[in-house]
Image (cartoon, rainbow, N blue to C red; front, side, top):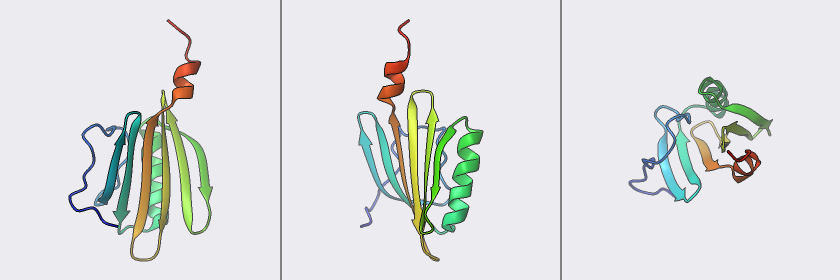
Length: 113
């Protein structure tokens, strides 16, 4: 389902990779983060490789990478935030589900100052 006028929220972190030319299908903000559904005309493998390159270049640590043939799942950690990416597609369109949230466990594990 396409949401007319969906856009990236102003609160979305600037250090999270956004594929050039991707269309925002849906955007949901939560108290602890954001979830975006994007659509790209780039192939799924190219989108996944771009996330791997750009996220690590921006200081995110890849914590999980799983290729299931029909899709790729990636997870990243940076400070007290996590980002998860699910990429799937056919020859015409690639769908990207991108979620960035504050990691309560990381915050709880941090020693008190």
